[in-house]
Length: 413
Ligand SMILES: *[C@@H]1O[C@H](CO)[C@@H](O)[C@H](O)[C@H]1NC(C)=O
Ligand SMILES: *[C@@H]1O[C@H](CO)[C@@H](O)[C@H](O)[C@H]1NC(C)=O
Ligand SMILES: *[C@@H]1O[C@H](CO)[C@@H](O)[C@H](O)[C@H]1NC(C)=O
Ligand SMILES: *[C@@H]1O[C@H](CO)[C@@H](O)[C@H](O)[C@H]1NC(C)=O
Ligand SMILES: *[C@@H]1O[C@H](CO)[C@@H](O)[C@H](O)[C@H]1NC(C)=O
Ligand SMILES: *[C@@H]1O[C@H](CO)[C@@H](O)[C@H](O)[C@H]1NC(C)=O
Image (cartoon, rainbow, N blue to C red; front, top):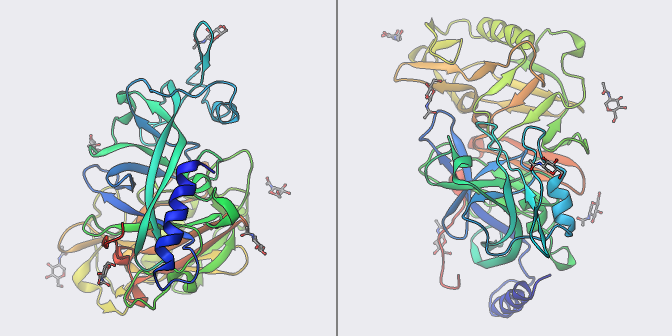
């Protein structure tokens, strides 16, 4: 608990006492932007009112491009030992020893190029918003969070307006842990991510419990429509994994060998992979079964990187978008994650829509990597305390979208 934070809480408590809220707010929120200037559509979290950090479920700590840091972190800090456990073998880096001091160095990784660079561990203030889940109530300043000061070269292949990577992993150095590290568990140890489907409207990331108001009316709380499935915890692996029992298309289970999915860590969630990838054997069956179920829709020559494309004008429409076979991810305990056309068909031009899943190869590490196209306009809640993932499936049938949160700054901010 840092002094400024405490002060802010006190001011906030005072501000709130003049408002209608009976309790202090327990939710923090920040905008999520979609970047469309690269091949990979990436998403960033906006902190400090305008700094964009690519979000990454696998990153152990946040890093940004900076000159040599004003306040380097000493080697004897626990955070230094933690950061150094994530040094990739390809990036050996020693700490910096001066006459009387030892300063901490670590090695952040660029999630696109996978390159790494020796960097100095430092501190940075981060500001985001308090909310009651409906509108913004004030600013919250976290002082001196641990981040890494990386060379400019590490930003290669990331969108131009981005200054670094925001870690959303479960590591104790990542943002979800830092933002819930407040007294009296004011902010619950969970976060909810909602990726927008275009760069026009900001999506949202909430730290703490709901409500998460994403439209259409101020009464709609996306936290109320979540279904839960266990997160597969593996203390040796950052990132988030779930158990998949199978995939069904129009209600019919895909016929793949029994052990295709039921290996630990076989289904991974990613904010970096643009389209869900399936291991080759699963992918082949998936394409074949989808084609079969899409009887009546005219297939056209495929457009890279996809392998199954259709004439959109032969699809017809339904309540949930285009009329195409419904895909269900059958999760470990019988929960069903439904994927409708806005998350399964990518329109590549006026006439052509393609099945937005890719072949992950024969030797893919995971059977399935769930990519960002499949989670746009879906709310995902990562609950650390209960080690579970809450998912909404598409919010569109509720009339809500990830762009539905009201980020309009009112007087008190
Ligand atoms: C986009 O992808 C193409 C083909 O994969 C590649 O040649 C090109 O360099 C990529 N562009 C960017 C900006 O990454
Ligand atoms: C790190 O320190 C060790 C021991 O002093 C030395 O052998 C090694 O070359 C150093 N590595 C780098 C990358 O500086
Ligand atoms: C999967 O995880 C469970 C529980 O941690 C363990 O008992 C089992 O041996 C693991 N299976 C494989 C194939 O790694
Ligand atoms: C799609 O179908 C429509 C109507 O049948 C036809 O006019 C059009 O040429 C087709 N487009 C493509 C790309 O096949
Ligand atoms: C953790 O979860 C349990 C239920 O599994 C709940 O009773 C408890 O209040 C939670 N603790 C926090 C800090 O959220
Ligand atoms: C969004 O929030 C602002 C400030 O709280 C408020 O004035 C405005 O009416 C809200 N807009 C909608 C559509 O609710």
